[in-house]
Length: 306
Image (cartoon, rainbow, N blue to C red; front, side, top):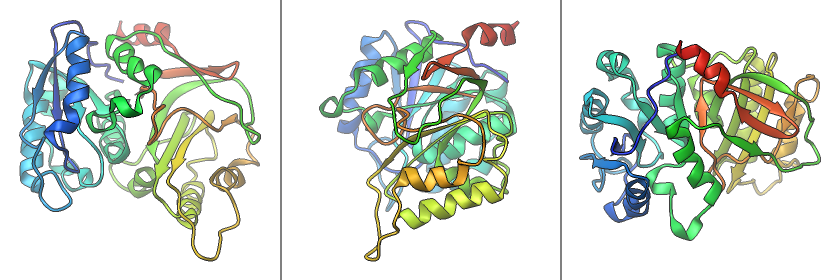
């Protein structure tokens, strides 16, 4: 895996919106936080604009993102928000300059398409975590905010996982991959599809009907994405909907049904997703599960850099 250089004070972080729109006022808290940490911020042309469901037309979003990928003065790109739209431009991006001068990409939700593409096609690590639009002081979680700073600096992280009745505890070690369940399912059979064998997989989602969660998980299971995991981390399933005729199972029970016959650890209530507690995770790098905690393996990571 290609590990981009970690950031130091004075480095520049770019903010762009390759999917949904975001107002300039909405990013102010994140810009203030990044500045407090000692970083410079460059705001892209697609921040503060809108075009129907998107921040801008496809070619404008692509151009803004491409410029930040090519700009060697930008050391990390923090996406403004998810929504929808990354898949419309992902195959048109020229990664040649980015591969010569890799940088950290940080986002989640619809940005899962970008994160899994980097992992599958380019072997480049990225960060799954809060975006500019998701960082609001009215919905503040200190651990999640600090985790962004820690991960950008390359510090070791340890996240405690709350108890849950369906949790199957156990120790595991492996490369961490994952993201939004809808995007993972949508990517199956594409160039951005992820290989899950021997990996620690994490999933989360928002605003889905229970039957659709069930369908997507069956898709993962039938595609043998759940068979040979090292572990499964189930994050937040927020604002979940049900039909007039109830589905009859909770979101956690829907997940458990698909993986109960396997032997690997399964942890629910993992702190990731469309919620205040959404810790930053390095996708494509090694972690271990021990004593109900997820721990980054910085020692192994350092050996990969040699």
